[in-house]
Amino acid sequence: MLRVWRATINSLNGLIFAFRSERAVREEVVALILALPLSWLVGVTPARRVELVVVVLLLLVVELLNTAIEKLADRLTLDHDPQIGRVKDMGSAAVGVALAIAGLTWLFAIAERIGII
Image (cartoon, rainbow, N blue to C red; front, side, top):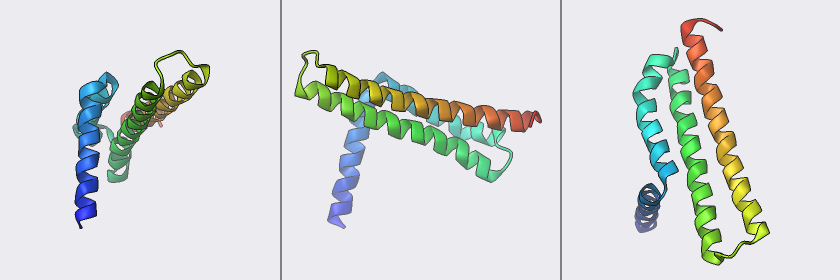
């Protein structure tokens, strides 16, 4: 039980640090807060409402992982390193893909709500 408690504290500390240090994380937390009530307006079924919130959570997860990669890379060296640059670009691409998934999911749900599909 102590291990679970410590893991929870570490996770909370990581989330707080990311929230304080990264604008993108703050923006995605705001998106999550907005997604909670909006999912009830947009989602046609309970499952769709859950999907709309989960896809924003997925985006936040990917952003947290990207932030961790960037912080670690910056800790290794602040000099320009092409390989580290490519790793950072891949992390950014992952965020972009997650953002596209979230956006398409929300657009699909909105189209479903207004009767286009």
